[in-house]
Length: 317
Image (cartoon, rainbow, N blue to C red; front, top):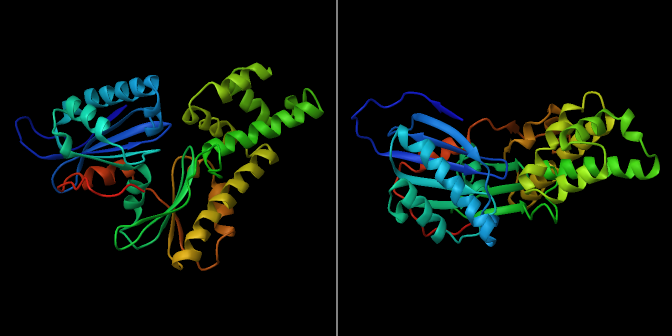
């Protein structure tokens, strides 16, 4: 998927900045012209830095980078790239080399960081506020005025990541199958269970097992869409979304207790699944907390960051 706006005229030289926001669900990119105008944007398949731990995962990441380059280059050759990847831990040498070869750049012109860093910078300047991000996983983030990254949560879907898409999907599946243990066939009277089983392919346990254990975490997280779609008809689904909001509020409270009260921005695809999430989060924060739903695209922020010279010596969050 590609959207273009303010496309550069043929023959007009410009030093474009390419921003990449890579998550488990999708990888969004944007190309910024000098001055910050976004001239093109689009998306390709999701990816995670955690995939770099296996050969199959590395092949998938490289293939996604290749598709991204094919999508970007017709709109302009970027001079620099700022890329945020979910699961990024600081080892970027191979990632830089791959992307540099595909975009015809020097590796030093490419900066990799956590996807949460660019999401934060899309909402706040350093020191201004707290970001709570709910995508496939969840994390609370604060970048102080010295540029130091501080987190709450973000430990991965196996350990926690409460309130994220994977967590919502897991809570729904757990409730459905506990009900089936006690009352086989109970799913037929549950709008949430019907939506979930329709999404995974069938009501037999084999479909759920293959879905949960046979796919990447980002694909599993997409099941949260079915939970949200049934929330207005199923009180259990609504309850799961409210609990997701409370889980996300906990992240903001943890940061406020450590660094003092500040405005909070809620961001990420899972955060926008249903108004119940934001409502429950707001109710669980201090009454004077300023809470907003972030609308700025992290890939746009990354593209504008890429317009300036890149320092690749920063520490990853």
